[in-house]
Image 1 (cartoon, rainbow, N blue to C red):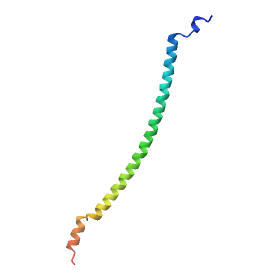
Image 2 (cartoon, rainbow, N blue to C red):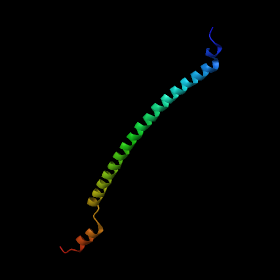
Image 3 (cartoon, one colour):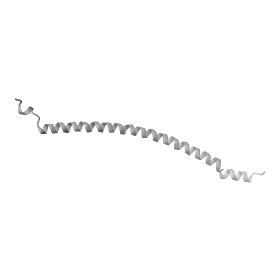
Image 4 (cartoon, rainbow, N blue to C red):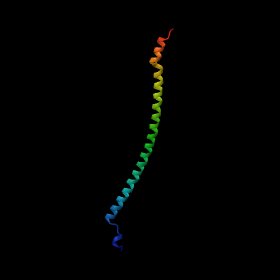
Length: 83
């Protein structure tokens, strides 16, 4: 007959089950943290691309505005110059 202390008790089984559940939860948490890190890196890349795109659009807008709306000094010079 086995000694009484080597027999699994319901408390030991519950503890082992809880440790197993904790291990599974930590594995899921680890995967979620890894996924969050990957998504954060992707967000950083996308934000950098948006910054470049916004700067390009601003430059295009300023160039188009300069072509379509002449500066007030240029208008005054063209009006005052003799023809």
